[in-house]
Image (cartoon, rainbow, N blue to C red; front, side):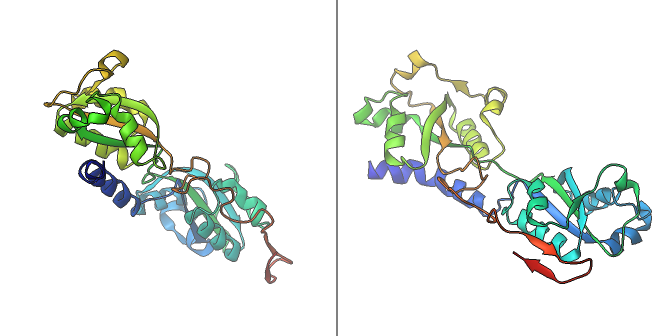
Length: 268
């Protein structure tokens, strides 16, 4: 079984872990000084139109999720908290940064105030979700495992036994040529390829789902098999690769306030 781990799992898991080094979070925020917002001629200094300037300069910014304004210190701190994924829900900035207020549709048509900072929060186009993890296994390896009698579906138990902390419930089992199998595995393991995408994706790549009865058959040496599992390492609540995390991010009682307009910032 140790040899099986090295030959089959390491290439897949290496790609999976390497993908994490370029991970982006779900939201991306940018705090812009009122002076800059007001001074942009192309947008006539309007708060809301500055969104287009940011999306043009940084195409990784997707749809706008939130606009807010407030003291520069709090605006910058809120931006950092969102970009570091310390605030899973951007609307929570109003709980932690008490002098920040939301900019509505009508207010967004006004010109920027040079005494304020403007927070623009976008959905990130670079955000990968790792709800699922896949492993592509060549037919000869599946067939050659004596403990499972070479049966396709029973190989699932071998994988979950080797890495019980990573592989969860089996979500999909498919077969096809090795090239298509590897492409499908890579697409899932680099994020943004959900189970919902698989029916369309498998058809495009020439993969075929393995049903219950077929799964009891002995593997074909001329095929490769893809096993797609629920990823136990992915924390769906916090959207990070930390399982079982009970607390994450800013403490509930953390607030950043200004005693007076223009007064000293206090962290409570």
